[in-house]
Length: 596
Image (cartoon, rainbow, N blue to C red; front, side, top):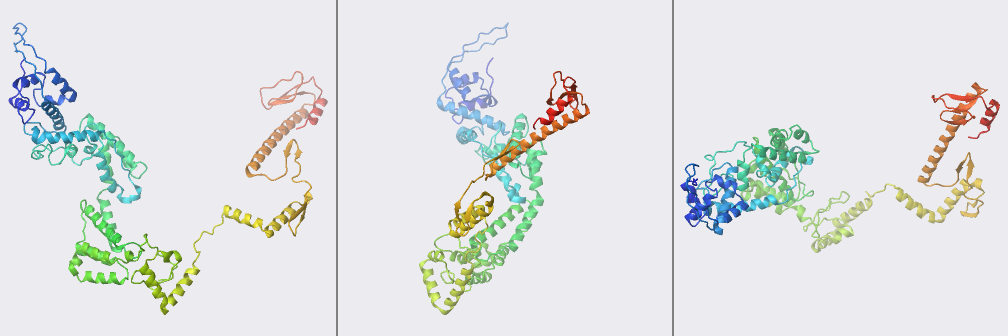
């Protein structure tokens, strides 16, 4: 049967703007392999294109007509070779058709031009395939430490992570997009010579246009659900995810509704405004640059809240007012700068960044920092009544370590101040305060290690030896140990420790025991005590049976007590069966003589 195709597809195969097959014979031979329209390109991949290029080298013989069989005569189709350029373009066209079908677009001559459209598509498609083969990213976890902002802070990072994790159709971020329906090609046309529309890229186009239906979507939706569960496990949001089974899209939007809804943004905005009104800076806790950064961050978070709810954003003048009101530092340079800002010098009153830059330049925290590096600590025990010098040095008494950290200029200024009458008086007072506080705050808690260390030192002294020997003498008076209490020397020892004593088959040696040895000995004594109690119970049971049956002998069920020649056990555990072949008097006497 002759090959049926369209003039547009023939032009696509032969034109230099598309596949660029050189001859009509080559076009006919490719058409004979089944490539007859754009839809047929979807079934071909790289391996299929290689096989096609080998097959077209063989000639297809002519077909002889057979009217009875309904066979129409067809001429032979000569074999041909497909050049490498055409092979590359043909493979690119196959990938483009698959992509267009996935995102709901129709391939035609306008969007299948190689030089204008498909050449850039092939570069992006190859990079996309490499990205899919890379190691999957770690799913970000929800942090309880973020408080009411935990989902608000987490959700943008999670969506970005899903755009780099791929399912069966494409990036998993398409499952989480806001609009479930896909815009038509009329509402979202291609951008000029690009292969994408308003989205702006390959991955973005997949995210915006892959349909949320079909078996492949269900599989990707379940994958997203598992990632959500891992991210929220162990947090207050876990119950929200658990309530929706195997539906990642529904679980994600439930999280956003419950933990990142409008009421959350209202609460965050309220807290931010409260922070701007109450946050204070005294020039010692942190630098002005860090304080300004905090104010700037509050404003940026208010802008984020503005995207979701109605929020009254402070203007530039109001932001400068917040900044000025937050400063409670009495430094002269800072006070002067605030005055310039209030007078609107260089427009600083209505420009937050200009006002912030002016305040950062006169930051006393930075001027007071030592050039040796590190932040200066605020020590409550140091007297600052002397003030601060022009170089930023504290006019007070310094410890040797603090003095070594000062610069040469600071040392010179401090030395000159110390020579004045005011400096001498303040220096003396500052030294006294520091001396009284010296050592305060050290760890004075007694520990076993400290106690043993003290005892070891005490025992080496003559007084300690005398004290210990006197205690030993008092403990061992009964053992004839002669100790001279005045010197602590032992004159004679008879026996120490005494020999072990054995009573009732229990050997208990005297002496000192380590804790684990003492516990072991206690266990042995309890075990022996239990055995003696059991034997005593048997003896009482047998004696009771003999008194009740003076003419009989026998055994108890749970163990032999006194056996006769024909003694037997009863089925009951509480009864005793006797045999009359042994005299009762002999039995009672043997019971009394038998040791425990």
